[in-house]
Amino acid sequence: GIQVEQSPPDLILQEGANSTLRCNFSDSVNNLQWFHQNPWGQLINLFYIPSGTKQNGRLSATTVATERYSLLYISSSQTTDSGVYFCAVYNQGGKLIFGQGTELSVKP
Amino acid sequence: SAVISQKPSRDICQRGTSLTIQCQVDSQVTMMFWYRQQPGQSLTLIATANQGSEATYESGFVIDKFPISRPNLTFSTLTVSNMSPEDSSIYLCSSGTGGLNTEAFFGQGTRLTVV
Image 1 (spheres, rainbow over the protein chains, first blue to last red):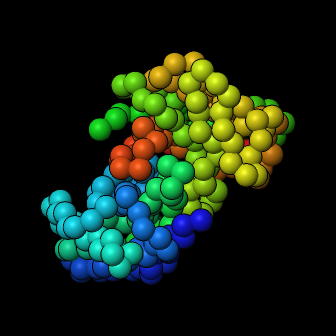
Image 2 (spheres, chains in turn brown, yellow):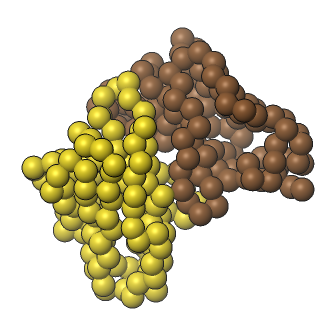
Image 3 (cartoon, each protein chain N blue to C red):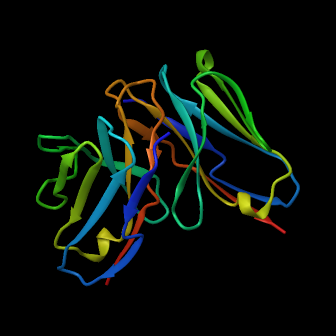
């Protein structure tokens, strides 16, 4: 089945710094999503981005489907950005497959 | 987008008991899914809740342990039966059409601790 790998697994930033999170997937996909899981466990939709580039405030994402990767950019990080970032793709059976996540900690 | 309400948000339960988690979607959806997230781990799909028929379980999950109901197109329940401390996890429901080009949305999760 499709494999989803995220890097880095952990990241510690100083408030105000920028970061790039990466998601590699092993097969072609029709859907890719980025989520932020807050400390209370809630999954928040960040981007639905099967291809191209999208921006939402300080966050942006780019998916290069032909090269099977996606990047999530966080600029001017804030302590509220802390948590785990997941990317997920649908397999051919219509099931959402998650990567292992990147745990981000932003220090004041 | 879909708004998904899940309850309870958290619970502490005695081993050997059962807990039923409810998931309500604000619109009719074809597919509802249940996930488990063990401490420090990623999300793993438990089953697909099918309206009008039995749920479809993933490898490693069985109906006796995780019975699921789906009485209509907006509501589903997951029961965690005969709990042990190993069942301590976050349980999340999700909705979508199941198609390959649709966005998935999640409830706020149920944080379960079994003592």
